[in-house]
Image (cartoon, helix red, strand yellow):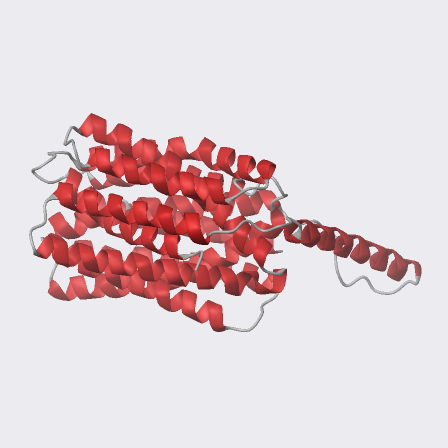
Length: 403
């Protein structure tokens, strides 16, 4: 039941993820793609230090519920204020504050899942959480579809999203419970250290016995992992940030149809999380391999979107929707793999680094994507080429980490 508040929160932000770019570039606000890029990029950049700050603070206090409640209540207030203005400068400022408080619940949520479950259940637990919240995103997109179709005003949609966060705050106040002791991540870290020492002793003994040395002793290349996370987030932001506007303007789809197309991406996410949740326990090496493969799949899918630029038609829209399904499916496996790896690789007290790394790539991509898209007729062609190239670079970074 403690996940109910997150479910409601993701309903709101699933709706907002598509609504905001369309709202900013609509006649009501009169903004441009560059304004969308500045708004999302500024928010993501500002969220980077706060990702680390909230993560450090909640681990230092060993309290997680207060940060979750603070996040949801602050978002409810900010979205209410969002509905009262159409000034682009004010909207950018408010959205930056939304990002600051949005990340306040992210690290606490990750830690709660890790501490309430043993290591062998982390992947399944993360997948169960992501599946539930992704269903919330899906419902939010469906609601956005019907609200857009029914002619709801932008301010009413924003007020509805604010109300969902109020309810998320209330349900979290009732159902979220902090673990009585914080020790699971510490135990996992000790196990990794002991395992590393044991492999070193085994190698020394084998060498003394003149046995063939069949393995190398080495610590994981954490830097390559961090770079891979940044690059993958960068490619994702370049690809997805201007995408609603691409469907709306380049393919001339109505706002309701844009919501419908993006539900396909969320359906792919849900299917991926469902499969991850129900598969048997996997080893760390398998998680690394999954992360490598999904980054490569995303590269191929991003490049396949080039066809939507060159051959705009109804069939192209169907193909693009299919691409989004597989994009979401691959991302589900990627996210669960990286969350599980991060809970092992990152030391206690620094769990927020995961969100910082993702935020760095996302912030840069949110700015670059719309800027590239606005360069001319073939702007989106360059967007998809750039995203595909960066996904490929992330694949190489994760390959180095997995050696």
